[in-house]
Length: 284
Image (cartoon, rainbow, N blue to C red; front, top):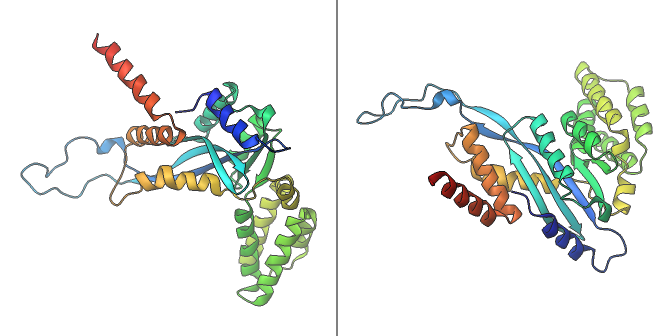
């Protein structure tokens, strides 16, 4: 599914032309829930054939199609390099990321690598293990959600809630995360629910102290949001797998995602060439 090192190097060189600084290479990691059916649903169901089909006896479930995307920032434009999405666990995603790194597909010495993601611990575990030197950025929108949840729980829908949330996000933008954490500690919760939400927000920001210096990131030309991977989730996963009435077996969904990633990565023709070659080998 992945483009060759030469193809990726050409795209990076095209973006770097005329610039004094190395281009920004962004790694986005996220999950997208898709509808799945169990393997026990396979086979002929009662009612098929000449009789009216009965309601299926299996129950579907929603599973996480975890994925990552590498792309370049060229001003306000995104230059896509590589997408990978599969209905697998976070360990398997980590292995796929490791393969990309070990294959040297991304020339990290020629770019300024950054990682943008939400606060999911499984994401940052792999980031710190494989890309510890990269700029690590907590998605601004997810961060704002936590802050606004505190404002709503503490102040309701009043103007005071909006003022507190905007002031807190301004402090975070200027790198004053310690001041925000201290303020949360000093706040007197007005309800048990507010106390719980405030503790949640404190834990969240404390775990990402180094990932919220948004002004510095912005001045360096790095993105503050994870829209690049979220749009990839929508285009690759949701548009095809989340159709009305569709429930997928895991193997079928992964094959479909592999084909869609190959098309998006520009390697679909190569996939079919390898497929035809395997067919000829098995028929001989």
